[in-house]
Length: 221
Length: 167
Image (cartoon, rainbow over all chains, first blue to last red; front, side, top):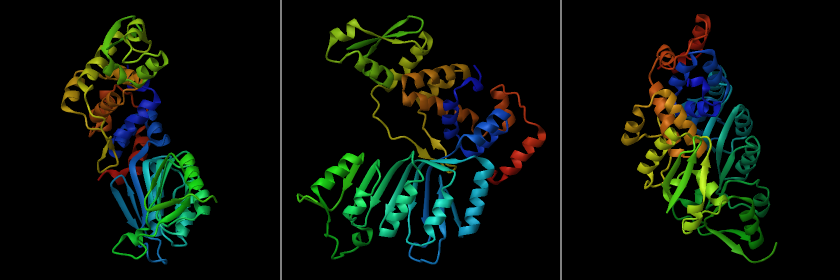
C-alpha cells in the first residue's frame, strides 16, 4: 500500500497533525501533494483569535491576530495585505478548529472583519459581545460562517428582541457585562430579565445554554 | 459479558463488552440488534459482522483496545508553536506501532476509521506525521517511494513562495 491509496479524508487529517514546515516539505515531493496542500484547506490551525489591539480607541483598527500560537501585530493595511498574501500563496483557504473574535465598537471594524474572513473556514467561531454595536457585528459575521458551530458570550444584558434575533447556536452564554464584573459595581447584581416563554424558546433553539445572573419570570410576553 | 465480532475472513473474535463499546460502529450495531450488557442471551445469540476488517488487523485493533479499555476519556490536543494539532502518543502506543511498516499502518488506520476508534486513529495519524516531521522533501519522497513529477522550476517557485516559514 502506498501513501496515494489513502483516502483523501485521511490525508487531510494527516495534514492537520503536521506543522506548516512539514506540510510544505511534503508539498515539494510531487504534484499530488502540492495540490493537496495548496487546494484543500490543508492550511489548518487549531486555534485563531482576532482582537482589536486598542479596543477603547475608536480611531484605530489595529488588529492582533493569532494563528496557532503565531502572532501578527500589524497596522491595518500592512497586516491585512501581508497575511492575505501569505494565505493566497500557500493555501486556497485556511481552516481554524476554533476562531475567536473579540469585537470592538470601532466603526471600521466590521467591514475590515468581513473582508478579512473571506476564504477562511472555522469549525467553531466564538464571539465575545459586550455592546449593542458588537452584537450587530457578531450577527453579520455569524452569517459568514453558515457551516460552523457558533458560540456567543453575551455580556450586555440583551433585550428580548436581541435574544429573539439570534440564529441557532451551539452555545449561548448570557453573563454579567464584563465592565460590571470588576470591582464592586453597583450594577453587579442587576440581573438580565427574560420571560419564561423566551427561556424555553432559547432552550429549544440553542444546543447549550449557560445563564449567569439571569432572572426568569413567569409573565407571558 | 462477551461480544462476538466476525471479520471479513470469517474469523470470530470474542471480546469483552467494554472493548466492543470502544468502537462507535460496533456500539451502534449492538444497539440496532438490541444487544445489551445485561442481556446475556442477546449477546450469545448474535454476532457483529465487520466486513471491512481482516483477521490480522482485527487482532491488532483488539490488542490496542485491551490496553486502553480502562483509559479515562481524554481532552484532545495541545498546540505547538506552528499551529499543529498534536496528539500525544504514549510510550506504549509508540512501541505498539513502531514495527508496523507503512502499509500495515494504513490498514490499521482504515480499520480504526471504519470502527470509529478515535484514539487509535489519532495515534496512527500522529505516528505517520512523526515519521515525516523534520524530514526534507527528498527524504519524505524516498520514505514513501514517491516519484517526484515536479520540475525544478516548479520546486523553485514553491520554495520561493514558502520561504517565509523557513525560519
